[in-house]
Length: 595
Image 1 (spheres, rainbow, N blue to C red):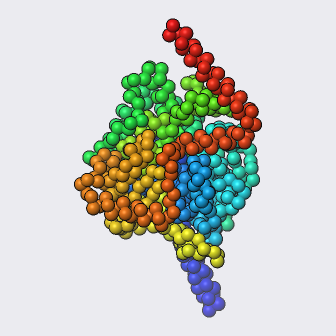
Image 2: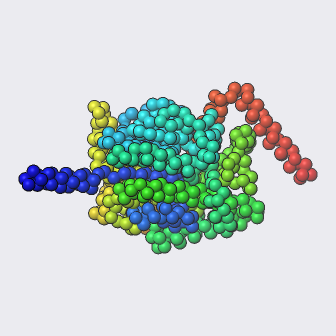
């Protein structure tokens, strides 16, 4: 009897112990990063685009309407994965746009340096499986690939972007599309489409270790909706005709929906973008073409959401969903760059290059294999609605993006917070969710940068109303465009052609559209914030740009250097001569017509 009782007690204690281990088990973490997704490009933020799975995450989590990133992809990705400011982690700009004078400095290489530790490394050390399936853009030499920065299994595209249907580059920036799996170059499957493939591989990686009891961290940085904008026809068809009234109507509609969704205050106003064309000035055929381009864009967002839904279904079917935290966000605001908006000889060369790569811009094939389009500044203003400016610029349209934290342990379900949050906070949040301590200036005996972000978890549990005090500041600079946040306020300076190269002051909580400059009304606040920005520059070794610096122009120079390396100078000169002849012939034809 005593022996039986002892066995019974041992069984009960053992069961209790196992149950408590199960309860205390660290959650799985899925970090989903869209590319160039505008503030109101998803349904929870006021979009007409159907995103039921992202909407479900919003309903089961907390939405942030005052979350900010860098206004360009690589700086955001570096801060997202390290919690360290971009000027200290080696990625203050995309490497393709860093001028030679800056690139001589160690903190301006455009790739993650060795003074930082990624959250993937820290989670892996703590017993997590760590997976990456998607875009990297933090270095493509062997020692810089994600397989060397803490990720156990990887499938990654290492460049700024690439074709979504085939293994080929999307601009002359690259000799080829750089794809890797676990550190080795790979080819792509015949049925490849980027959003589908990334989720296929994420499910494959998660499933491969599902039964070993360890939690996983799955980082899924999509190519959607980066240039080239491409989507399967069945997704595009859902939006045909929806954008026939043009970008200004869409921008207005998005504003009203964002108000209804409480993503912006009721009194929010918008500025008119100087780069937005008058829709009524277009011909009927031009309107038809632009409308379909936006339909493809919407289809690309829709397709991304569809494949996110496949991952959610898989996690539910395998009993892993309830122990998973989801973080969904974007790397920056909407992309307004027009690849063909450059000098005539560059435009002609780009057309010849695209033809050689099998790209076309035909109306009938827009979005499908071989098609090449980008949205351009006019519809980009709608994607950013009601915010000002776009990707690359320090306006809210370039920096303020969606953020949803959803799932296990999140108690503020279906709610919205207007608390200021910044991209470096994501790393701190993930570490707190996993119960992993951040490195405090030291990792495995070497000095490293400390995380400067703050965990957002107290906001998701309703414990606090804000995580930054009224006196704390966050500085920012990218390519000469700059900002500093303090409390509800922001100072901003943007260079031309979008900005005026002057500093302005806005209350971005009540005026997210940045329509009322408060610099003259609040001179002391402006002066104090300017002083704080100067301290940020000094403390983080922020380098100035030349007066004639232009981010896009610098990338074009990078592309020219790349192509000179690929082809002999004589071949490249031949291309330029042919381009010049092509332009001359067109002008001669126009002269004849005029006669």
